[in-house]
Image (cartoon, rainbow, N blue to C red; front, side):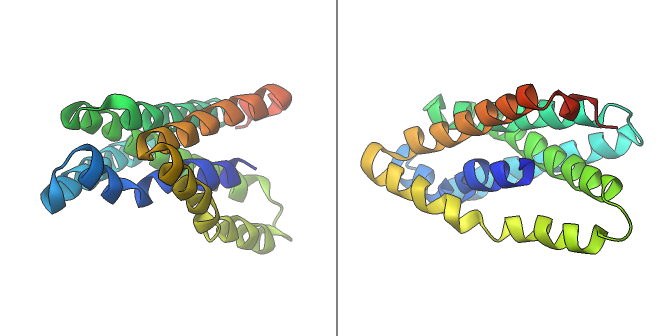
Length: 176
């Protein structure tokens, strides 16, 4: 469920970046390159931080924290209205998204039994193929209400649903 949420509500922000570049920031190809590069720097920082933690014992708490960081950062990016402020939020979106994906992948692999791990990972990887399904409603919403509102809604929904799932399943907080 956690992998599905990020793919459907969070990741479509990346496909909307060209729209932000042209319609919101009026910055052209160089602006798109800067937006994507800052996201990559944040992703690298997030990956290095997760690697630094090693066998961190509160992975469930970290999973929830990175899900919230990713969703909220995407929403704030979309609503920032300023190119430079957006870069700040994209730095955290990159860190949160990559941290989330790393931890989620680790938890799926360590909690699946040896007998079904391959099948579980196949289903897990299949969720990444569903990203176009999240892009479609985001694109429709962007067409009707504008890209900032569509992306902000996706980030907000990701944060809200992740928190809701964690409240419904408190065992998620305690995963190691």
